[in-house]
Image 1 (cartoon, rainbow, N blue to C red):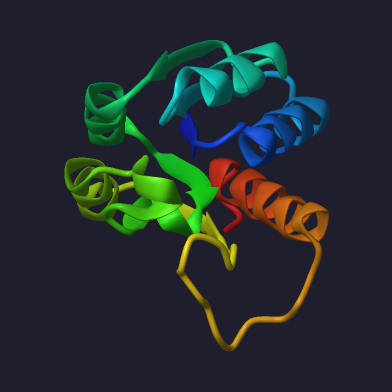
Image 2 (cartoon, rainbow, N blue to C red; image 1 turned 120 degrees about the vertical axis):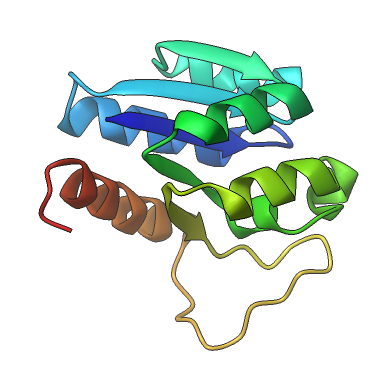
Length: 138
C-alpha cells in the first residue's frame, strides 16, 4: 500500500496525519510530499519513511499512489497561497489513487455542507478511513 501525504504551509496537518497513521499502524510505508521544505521536514520528523518537496515529486508520487491524503486545497490550482501549482492539482486529481481530502476553509477556499469539526477531529477521521482502505475494509 503506497500512501502519500501531501501538505504545505508549515506542514502541521501532514505531521499530525503521519503521527496518527504511524501510531495506529506502524508497518505502513508513508511518503511525505511537501509543497515547501518546511512542510516536508515536519512530516519527516513525524516519522514518514521518505519525503520530497515540490511540483515534480507530487506528479511522480501520484502515478503510483494507492491513497493520497491532504487538505482539500491540494486539488485546487493556486491554492495554499499559491503553493499548489496547476500541474500538482492536475496530477492529484487525475491519479487513480483513493483521495482523502480534509476540508479547510483557508486561502479563499470555502467549503459548505460539512460539519464544523476541529482539525484534530478531521485528521482522526482521515486516518481511520485510510486504515480501512489500506486493509481492504473501505
